[in-house]
Length: 97
Image 1 (cartoon, rainbow, N blue to C red):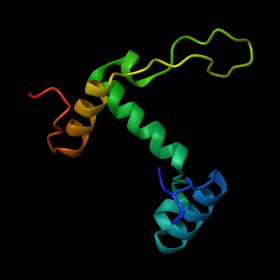
Image 2 (cartoon, one colour):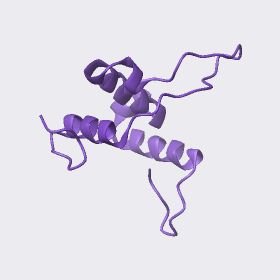
Image 3 (cartoon, rainbow, N blue to C red):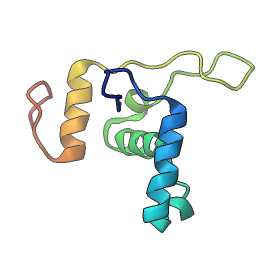
Image 4 (cartoon, rainbow, N blue to C red):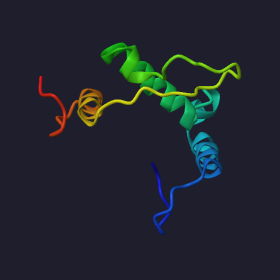
């Protein structure tokens, strides 16, 4: 999501460094162990509760490794609708209430 000035996406290492820096200024971030993964999980939980399991989660795991092998893909309209609901701002590509 974030990018360097040259347009390249920042690395996972850079995200980790940013969370350490944020945690120094906001102690609750360090205490709660907030991370990019935590934000993703929290957002997906909210989407699941508001739009259903299939929209937010991966399909059934078919491997023995415990990793996800297939993801359910949302349409552009579904993503725009969820974004509008999450932010409270309408999105031109989402379903209108």
